[in-house]
Length: 95
Image 1 (tube, rainbow, N blue to C red):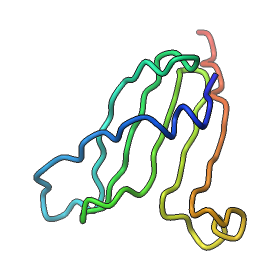
Image 2 (image 1 turned 60 degrees about the vertical axis):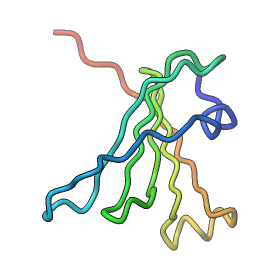
Image 3 (image 1 turned 180 degrees about the horizontal axis):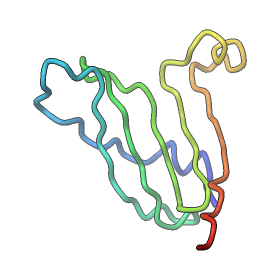
Image 4 (image 1 turned 45 degrees about the vertical axis):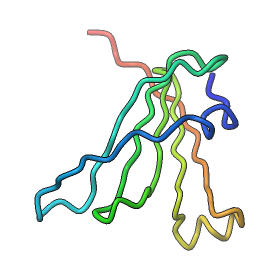
């Protein structure tokens, strides 16, 4: 189970220090033990200028993305400048 308050308190993953010139985005990832959420993968996506764009969290069953710089449509939904998207990961088909 993913709890937004717990996830928002997780520390940021560091952005890579050097990027090739062609790269516009970079990401850092860390697995955290987040109390009631259990083990959570947190992926932080940064712009080339090292500004945090959004965070992705997953416990293996569900995932949440959190936009730090929301798009116009998202800003209309959330005046707090943060927009959450909650989704469920569909199971893989058995072969």
